[in-house]
Length: 347
Image 1 (tube, rainbow, N blue to C red):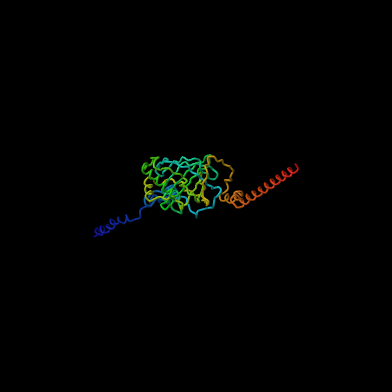
Image 2: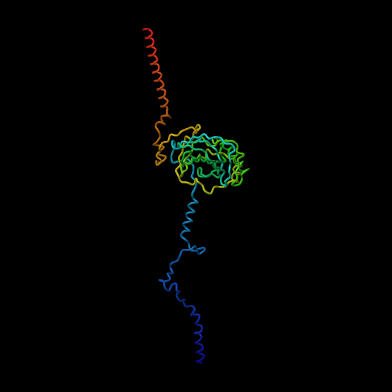
């Protein structure tokens, strides 16, 4: 009986093994010595991929985001910083060209233009080096891009900034002569030079930039070594939907846009003027205070002599001088004849 009780009492000893496994596990080495293992020093990770985040990855991403937000300069009357007259004086008389070479560069069409010195801007003489055609426009106009844009590149004759003249292209434009010129260029290139790297010197006919550049008010700004003139969307060159579709089939959007700048814009309400041939003209060079802001230069450096020439006061002044000259001439003639008459009587 005692043996039976002994056997019965021994069963709990054997069934106690599950109790051993239920005991809490011994502390891990990671937490047994905080000084040596430092278990709380955890690197940040990408939760989805469990990959440590590198600090420079965040910087690169933020830089890329900033670049992607950069927008072209917006040409709008609401963006004007001031009016510019003397320093933005623009005059031209472009020559005619016949079937110039038109090259497809993939992101724009470039037309050569063999021009005589025919342009002045801010008392600097220029000649045209090329005409570029883009689609869509490089600049924004009233906050959006237009169908395309023409850029006329001018180079200075005696050193200085280059001059770029931009004219928007739009399906709602109404400039007839310029539209015909643009259509001829697009048709010629799409037919004989449809791929990047190809060119043609046929099909464009004879034309002059006098029929392309508007005689209207324009906007202007400076960026680096470039002086820039931009016409408003109200003076856009018209293009048909068919020609626009053709243009966009042979060129694509530029990858590097020179119009992505942050600079003040000024307006010249007088617009350009037609000039005589500039090949025989000489320049009166005067030092300018280039460190002075453009708007201060416009307001404070206006010539009194020029104001007089443009006023009615100059006309009155000339009339008075003529009247005085007539009276003086009459006086001397009268005196001469009187003396001659008296000498005849005495003789």
